[in-house]
Length: 306
Image (cartoon, rainbow, N blue to C red; front, side):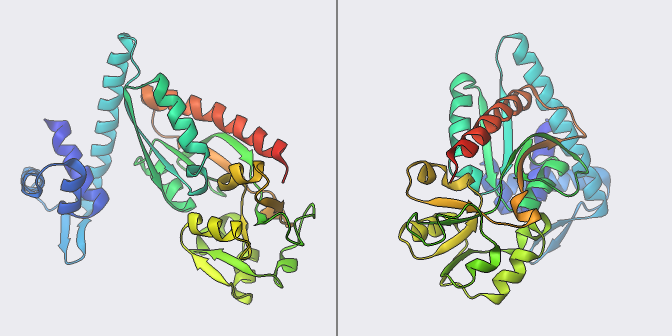
């Protein structure tokens, strides 16, 4: 029962809304609200500020959230350890990831994993690179796929692969035959941008952001799927890693030429986990699986060349 109440509380804290938490938990909003009120009555102080734009944790609420996440994690570890004695790998694993690994790499890796461990439920959440780091360090995700962080407080890197920023384009484009391209050489060509662009600044520096401010694109989208279709139609060129284009690159439909520049060319994709908590049985199994899969995927990208 204690675990149920804490799960309700954590969901409200995560979504900032009783209604959204109830939808996620598949129970009535009144049931969630009733448990939150009981918890506040037990502690004798509000755990949330009720605002027009949603529920925000008070200082006391943040203390309770830390306890809730630790307790729920320990309970999940216990259940996983018990099932392991029966020869079963079970539990829930949450993976926070960038958009690009979610296109080809992660679906294939997850499919292989669940075919071996059908009692494990996987939740994949796509977010920007900084959010991935925060999700893992704060315990809302078990594992993360993000670019190599300049700070690693609260996270441990389990595996990483070279992942340079490239110019992605059709193979007949005049830049496609090069082995590397200075960013400034792209300014005279039709450009396609993905927004929001500023999420990459902590990982690649100011060079890309400065370039984008100086050069107007022909198209902008907040989804890689739209940008990919525009690239395949030859509308322009875009700046990405090879991660989300592995199938198109292998088929020769697109090429990806690395950009020159110390930070642009040295970008790395990392598999991260929390450095502050022991993983569950399911989390450990998935971490080992993704380490091997990422190393193999990185080798494939290198061998694929452009």
